[in-house]
Image 1 (cartoon, rainbow, N blue to C red):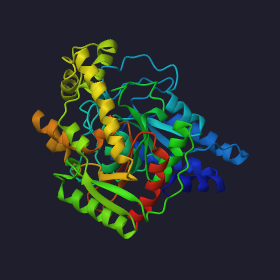
Image 2 (image 1 turned 135 degrees about the vertical axis):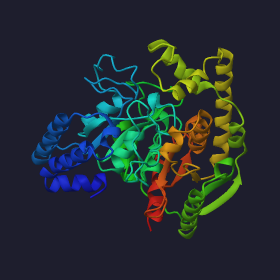
Image 3 (image 1 turned 45 degrees about the vertical axis):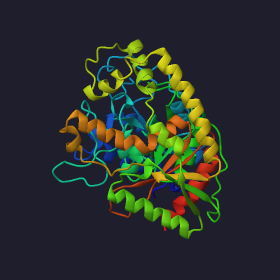
Length: 447
């Protein structure tokens, strides 16, 4: 029993299974020998048990809601009523508890989901790696070793990815500003969906960049993501799988297919061969505006992040992860003229990209150019190494947020091998078509 659909079917047949599953997941989350202590910044076991009992009763009396009894972890970026939102930091620990749920959290709660703790993350969501010097770093599900070493979980929704991969909950709520849902998904063998940003309200939490932030799920399947997105967005989408015969996918002759780890290249090219065998047409063609964007400096994310911190925390950097603070300081010297130019350029660039992408069903590329690096190599390496790895990890995902598009990462590696993801991308507001395609691609990849 892995997917949300399977969970709900089991709960409908035997309501007590809600309580049994919640207890089993809590046991994993609180196991001191497991990743739980590094996955959760806070975990209210009694609240989980109370919610599980309520859900079981709703199944008994026929009032179950769409996500009744489904356990979902919450990234420490979202407000949850009565809890302190710290964004993986220590400088915000003395904030007042939130007086209301963030809209995304409220919608999950109202749909019957059981909220399972606040998950660890890159401090203030400002990295794709997932390292947190304050609360520890949960290890990716792949390549854990008896001596406690392992691989990075991906960021910034690091705890969310590991919480699902380790069976501490059924899905996770994350944010994605440059890949922060998709990267923890790929490094933990999950599906991660980044919707078009407008579809889920970003209010009720701590922003990184209001121009790039989006909210999406990490889960075990495309169908899981669709079920959660329906609740988060309030917009049921028509996502019937398509016939891949005749589908046209763009494999760009672009930097996003260059300098790949051997494992990534092997798995993604094998995935493309499966799509060809299913009748899809793969077109290799230049995507010049994309490569141009990689050579054009856009300072807006750092500037917008620093704006929030200047207003709400201060600008000393005291108590911050030094590497996070360094990235924020990149926005210190950004002028209003710089920001105005970047906004104008982005609008022009999106139009250029959308005109090209209109001819294709989706863009295909690896979600990450590399497999998950070892945690020790990042923690013990110098700043230059850290920022180089971070840039490489974010390279294939960040442009989608600049596009204001939608994207999904699907696992495409062989069982037991290093986790690799195939990313499907479409322009803004193409979410229904993307998810329909993803259903079909997922079926092919699993064959």
